[in-house]
Image: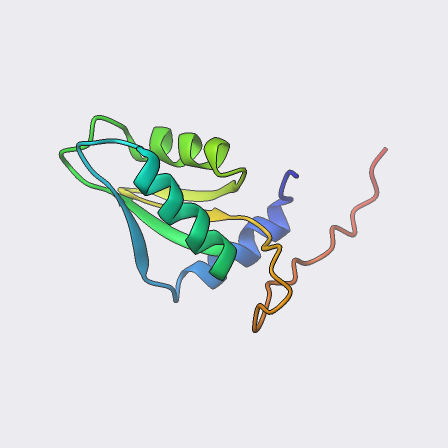
Length: 107
């Protein structure tokens, strides 16, 4: 599922008000971090992460690797922070994110 530029802009706006909950450190991306990311995405759909200075990964590398492993989308990477999005499968989610529709005609 590729995000359109309008959907990315919408998610970037929503990400401004959320706290950083994932940190990638010197251990890189392990099973515990991946479980934390999956649980957070399932509960919130949109999460913000940060790459610490002692990490061997760049913020872009960390975001892309986590996105692939968690089947999520990289919304943005700025400085040491990144934002990931994945639609939740939970039916009891309080206020799921409704993405704007792409109205541009393709073809």
